[in-house]
Image (cartoon, rainbow, N blue to C red; front, side, top):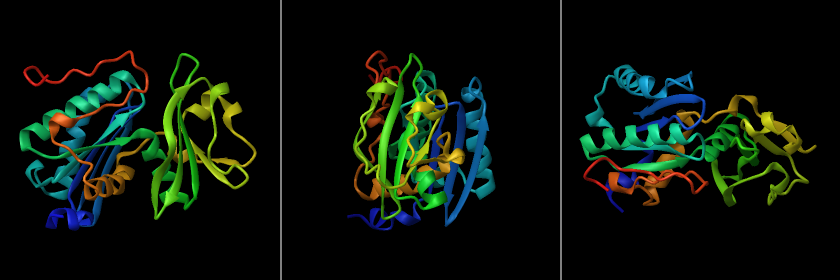
Length: 237
């Protein structure tokens, strides 16, 4: 393992997410976190880069000091995923930076874990068309770890793999849209309703140390539906 990977906890990481109604950016640098968030579902493309510039200025560094970019890979809004992936591609390409995709569902679960110390989390995003994006996670050494697989399905088709005899934290817009998904053992974590980039940082560093980062060619948005095709920049198909 390289010295950088061995010391991944010290990595300067820029995290971006625009996969839901929330637009968020976070920078982890020298033990500090600089974060911005805006609820502006129709303004992600206009807001994201200025927010990146702002957190870099707050940390008093340039993009050339960033060592890894973490991007919200989905699931979520098709347009939002495209924006996040395209912006990440442009930023990473200019500095030849490694990138790592972080699940929006996992980011919400991570927030519930960090904020409330829960051991089991279920995250659900309203997928429209009568469906939800669904993922179940356990707290493993402070990190949200997926149980089974993430999926998109109708609320009545949700299958559960966690131990629902024990307390389970619930987060995401899916529970607003389909309150019947909440069982008696669940407690709703309102502050984790949308993914926030600051909670992607620990997941990104772990993924980097595990060798899961790629170059810009390896960007992989996750839609869970098969009706959308990701297009790379011209000349890089």
